[in-house]
Length: 304
Ligand SMILES: C[S@@+](CC[C@H](N)C(=O)[O-])C[C@H]1O[C@@H](n2cnc3c(N)ncnc32)[C@H](O)[C@@H]1O
Image 1 (tube, rainbow, N blue to C red):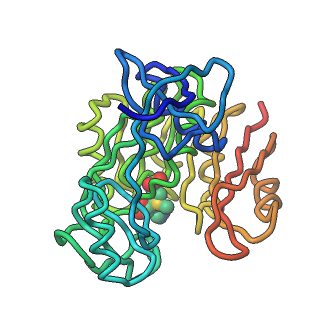
Image 2: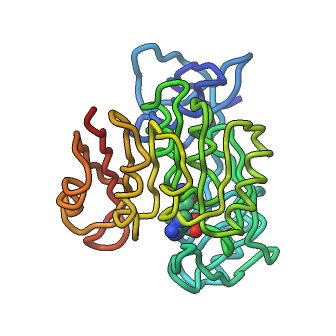
């Protein structure tokens, strides 16, 4: 069949999480294709590892040198306006139906982009699978980024079962629906009607009966009489700090606020956070936005 390699044998359920962790640690051998054996998944390793066993693997066929792109479901988003390269990207994976080039940056209140179609069928709508959940997205109508999937899993892991969660800037629902796996209730708010329309579809698609979609301005939420939440997610890096007073008013004492913010200095938003809240604050870098600027997340645990 193939070549004998070291590998880890994991259950189907934990395969995606283990694959991601091995990849992050540089231990997954990407030259070979993971494969199933009975009810288990075999993950090829770059080296011998405690618990590793020897199995045969098929090598992944070499890909032609492709231009840089990001994949969102069946759509590839190119970094350069390169129609010839787009054609090669399109044929590199059978799952792709469209290759787009962003003509604008992420902009406006709805945080959307305008795209040119470089190859494939002219579409901005696609279905994304993330950790077993499915999301219908339309990249020209509502924001979506697959790059935040690790963040969603981090918050899910930090949650207790049965929490009440508020997602103040929910978009098509990736945080809200992910966190609904553990939450008792998730209130998912967005100001963009197209995002809320997709969110409603995604709630149905994932058979969630504990997510309440709300079309509203997050700044108006304190006046709607919600009972305080255990956790508030604020994923609007350009402007979320402005809404911290509302988030603090909606979060219970001892609850947690996850504030995503764009910054160019460590601790840039700490003075504002200290001015509005009391409690423990942990700051982490999430991803680079542009040279010298990054998205940070501040996990704020309110004092009891
Ligand atoms: C960066 S996107 C994040 C969406 C989603 N959390 C995700 O991870 O895909 C921010 C979202 O906030 C929404 N938004 C912007 N201003 C808002 C406001 N004042 N109230 C509620 N939603 C708002 C936008 O429409 C957009 O969908």
